[in-house]
Length: 399
Image (cartoon, rainbow, N blue to C red; front, side):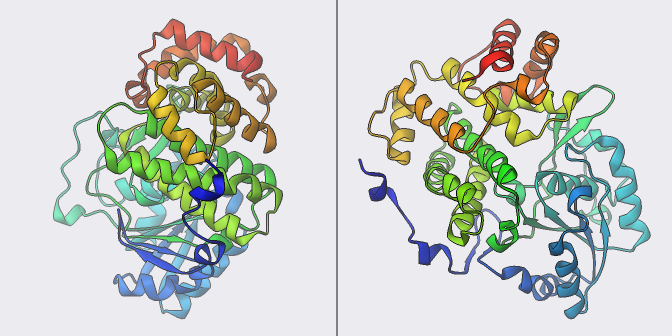
């Protein structure tokens, strides 16, 4: 099958503004950040806290967001004390900024860390619960009407995490040196604004790393066992878009169609992993918590190792993924080779040792990874010993 036969949207269509309502209201299209003031005002917001990470605080999109809000008579302040791998000990200051400023909404703008930081602040902003009371596997706190979560707006500036349509956040527990998922079923974005112009200035290496994160989301979500045709269909469509546009977005950083295709592909992959993820993320979360590695880059390095573990015997799913990517040979080995070629093309290092992950951590990380919620939805059950072997392989030579 020729890859051109799979194209579901033309370049011109990708550049058109679109409004979608699933799974949350989504405003997509180049230049749509200019609408944020009116959209926020229409939601009844009068004083928003803009949340981003330290590295994004002085980037142009922060000032532009504040300007657009002011033009619509919406007040705003900025909180940016969020690390690349957000930490539990950073959220108290964010909650204080929300309350002291009299804010009624959170606008999380930036990459995945900004999204996670904004969500964490929102979870605790109006109640006295501890942050860890919202951990995924804990009984969900009861939120009264007086404690209602603030309105949440998400604006991704990278095409990778796909975090913009859900209220879940990945957070480092500093004392344990582990990452955990936090959420509450009543806390979801009221609007996700996807403007590909915001991703134009992203450096090539970050375009590659965040794009590989989206690629991993689509693949791992599709491989999760169980009948979920909604997520499976979305994962395959996301995979098609990412495969088509990721190498071009890295090669041509100013290609707006490539940026748009990646932003939508990333969003779809993020929706798909409502179904779950797998060992790539279970391992990557714990490596990131200990060594502060960039999440998408860590995923990208580990991905082929885990695919070699997971894919034998999954020929049907491998065939569907290969078809989505326009690969003529549909065996697990051929699919893995294609993924490795993409990773080579976008400049992903071939081992975790290249990003300073030491040999001695494998056993410790394997035990932690087994506790990660993503390990539970991996398509093949793994012991701590097997995960240790995968980590050792990824450290020495992942591909």
